Amino acid sequence: MKEEKIAEILKALAHPTRLKILELLKEGERCVCEMLLPLKLNQANVSQHLAILKHFGVVEAKKKGFYVYYRLRNPKFAEILKALDEILIELLNEEQETLRELRRAK
Amino acid sequence: MKEEKIAEILKALAHPTRLKILELLKEGERCVCEMLLPLKLNQANVSQHLAILKHFGVVEAKKKGFYVYYRLRNPKFAEILKALDEILIELLNEEQETLRELRRAK
DNA sequence: TCGGTATATATAAATATTCGAATATACTAA
DNA sequence: TTAGTATATTCGAATATTTATATATACCGA
Image 1 (cartoon, protein in one colour):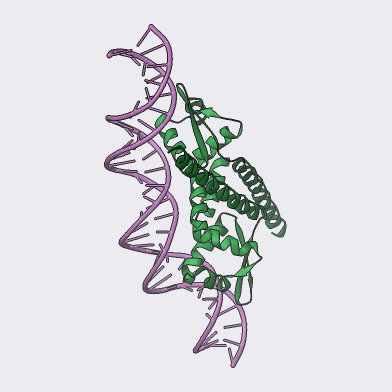
Image 2 (cartoon, rainbow over the protein chains, first blue to last red):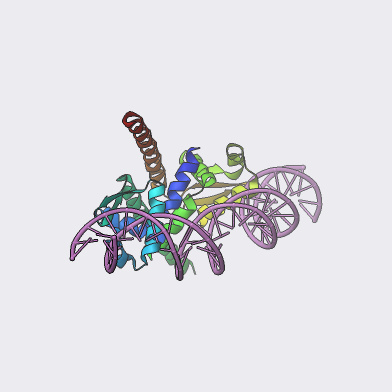
C-alpha cells in the first residue's frame, strides 16, 4: 500500500538528528566524520541514523578510500524540507496573531 | 529548536491512516463521519488520529451543527504529499532498474 | 602483516506510539 | 428536558523507536 511506504519514508525523516543530517546534506555530500562535529553526537549514533535514512531511500552512500560519503538520494527531499520550514514559520506567525487577538479581545 | 518542531510535524504525518486522512482532505473539507467509510476504521481511532494532526498544526477543525469539519491548515501539506508520491515512484523505478542490471550482469 | 582510523552493527534498557474498549461530551430535534 | 447522533477522551496492553555501550568490520599506510 502506498501510504505504508510513504509513512515509512516520513518516519525516517521524523527525527531531529536525522533532520540535521539532511540539512547538512542539502549543501552537498559529507562523510560521516564531517558530520560528527556539527551534530555533536557520537559516531555510533550518527551511523545508526544514517542507516535508517539509507534503508528508506532518503540518502545514498559511496565509499571513497577511508571515508563513506553520504548524499540525498532525491533532490525533492530538499524541497520538502524547505516547505516544512515555511510551514513552521507560518504556523508560528499564526500563533502570534492568535495571541495578539486574544489580548485585544480581553 | 527548529528540527524538534519539524520532527513533530513529520511524526504527525508519518502514519498510514493519517496519510489517508490527508489524501481525503486534499480534495476539500470533510466531517469525521464522511471519513469513516473510506478509512474503514472505528470512530474513536479516527478521532485519535485527527487529534494528533490537529495538535501539530496539520489540520484545523470547525464545528457546524452536528458535524465537525476538518481541512488542511496549510496548502503546502498537499505539495509535500505530492512530492512524496513522486519520490516513491522514482524510488520504485530505480529499484526495478537495479534488478534489471543485476539480471543482465549475471 | 600490523596498527590505527573510519564506519557499521548488535544488544538491551528506556521511552514513545498505536489501537481497542469503555466512557464522556456536545449538539439537535422533539 | 430527554433521546439520539456525532465526536472526543482516557486507559492499558502490545508494539516500535531511541540511545548508549560494546564490539565488529573495512580500509589505509608503514
